[in-house]
Length: 249
Image (tube, rainbow, N blue to C red; front, side):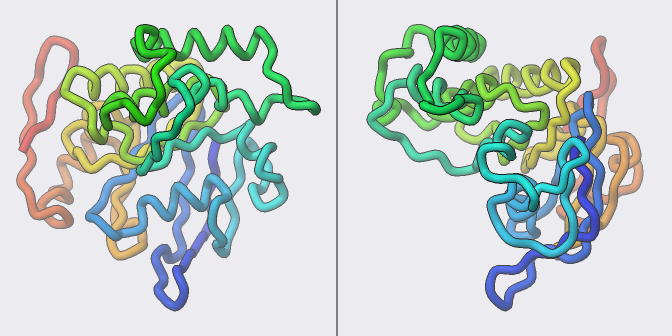
């Protein structure tokens, strides 16, 4: 579980977040939505312990500021918005997700390799396991990064625009995977620009405007409130299908 209490954050003199409080429970998908520049990524980076902030962020009851980088990474897996390719292979990149769990002298075990192989297979990347990530398309690089998050086996998952570069089928595969991680008991905290997809998969949605939480609630509450039109300037519709409700512009 992630508990965010009255955090504020700035880049120099530019305040990006102002007095944000939010709980991200285990076993649920919590989505942050908002216009570009509203502070969504800054919020995730603060939770991951990657930038300074005032206030308190607790992960599984422990203040993130008291944890070192390795201990934080055991508890929190963070998929950043921008990934850089390298000369590492797909498998070796995914294996890096096991690094926080390695005791000195930091040698990967067969168990680490088995966990990483399973993550590669989960994202349907087994045929590309030996290919360098510098040779991948943006979509395949994204799927490799997601496999690394899976291999990390943290109890709290931060996903910053995880569906970027993915085709329609892969987007659904990724969000279904996020749902499975939540069902396994993990706290999934995601930033999504795709509002219909956010409402489809989220258990709770927090809408940020000008660095503060403008609204928070279930997908039904967010839809019924007309917030999409107030904040995003778009009209949302919905329809019922056999397996639930679908939202669309």
